[in-house]
Length: 219
Picture (tube, rainbow, N blue to C red):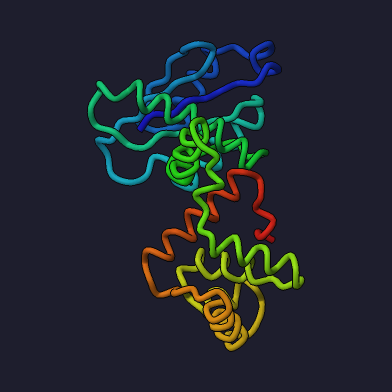
């Protein structure tokens, strides 16, 4: 696993990089830290069981980052040393995209952001809003015209893996209300929410809107 630490201007002017390297190696087990382009970069060995970023390590890391005005990221795992450059870039992209979507966090893992990374690359060539499922755009337009809340319900339902009980808990409403709303959404917009391709299309469309800053349906 590869980790990159990026410092803001305040940190660059006020901390000693070698000292930070040594401190980071004490916090993150099985890691070797170097200084590269004014960043702390760490390679973490996979030759051990368990997650190197367990709860205890994450708590220590968060304190370390906060005290030293740093932000950090970690790439996906890899096994071939020839892939170091690619995974270093993953870590850098995790910071870039993570700060765009979740500004204020100190630590970003690449995995939750890989889809947004894909969209970031695609957005350089196309208007990615054009890839949104037309039916989802219909739901958004319907909500705007009739002051309904179907987009939020649908989004919550999908991130809950189409589990009505979990959805009801997240929305703090009765399970029967969820069943009623989902059935009504399906009927009004002719959406087959049991079709895996439809689910994929809507999930991707939601991510596109979130990336574009149009995620008002998240409350």
